Length: 486
Image (cartoon, one colour):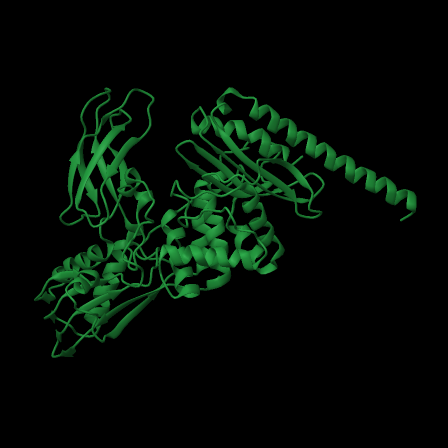
């Protein structure tokens, strides 16, 4: 190419970048001037990954509550440290001896943190009923007709605290606040269905619970809300607590309405469910249903066991894919604890967070003033800046292996996952891969945008404490996201 050609090409690139900067800056200025932003704070950063130019920025180093965009941070570190092919393992085992069809000992279901065990949501995992039936079949296959000991659910592969300590009380009883144990089932959730009225202000009644949970009692205070209202019913209850209060409103209507809650003690529920199926199969159980956590309280350590069957999860790549596309808190927290176990020899939230800091700092990201409290972003005390996120996205993009693992797990604007309904009728449809985050007074987006010049843009925008509905803020952020693709 001639010197004149090079000069013209250079001028074209500069003009293109300048136009892009102006478009994004104009969208930012319009958003900041909006009345809904008077009480709000925002952190924003977008960088061209080809030449390092900042496309647009606003308080890029100010830590904000990020909500679910934290899942990208957690899953990328887990994929690198554990490996995309990593699989969780759940074992059916026994202590004692089997003689003439009698197991003189205890039966164990021992988890390693698999968040997909007994789930019908991920290909490669078996649904709850099918998974329990498979346990029964394995027991029948070795000829056991009687068990003299206990059925024990063992979730002690992870720490006893199933939730991050800073999760909110009004989240814990609901499906999205389901904590992760070393032994999980049915994504640690249940469905509660109400009969309701077409008129507002009418008390509802519970008509079904699926699956059937033992010992749980519900205090139902739910009424029908005003016409046009949405699901505003919340289940209140702590882990290991079988008292559940349900408060709030559900939309009025003539058909039953279903909400989802968190199972109080997943390892116990696994043992209980297996005991029920064994009884139906005419296998006698002489002792009680319990968990290894309870036995530890009584100074009864796990006995030496023999494995009857092993069940492997889908690969971590598939778990990360659903975690990021569908924003599954349980998956993120399980990956965080597995990361802690691998890197720090401690399957705890604290160890997992330390491993996340170590991973990104080893890749050159300055994690100072990034305040990470959990893996999913459900904690309102997790706070991070847009610059932290774009630096992390840059690390992912530069690592060829990690990029091929993480980027396909991200939703596509206007097409899939949690980004399916943004920019649907825009020229930016299909040009942004990313993760959304939302909770009360929080809206966030992070990921990669393809600009008109073909360059890849890493971006993050987090808005806290805006004065409008979250759905309205989503619409107000769309022009800014669209500008990144121009």
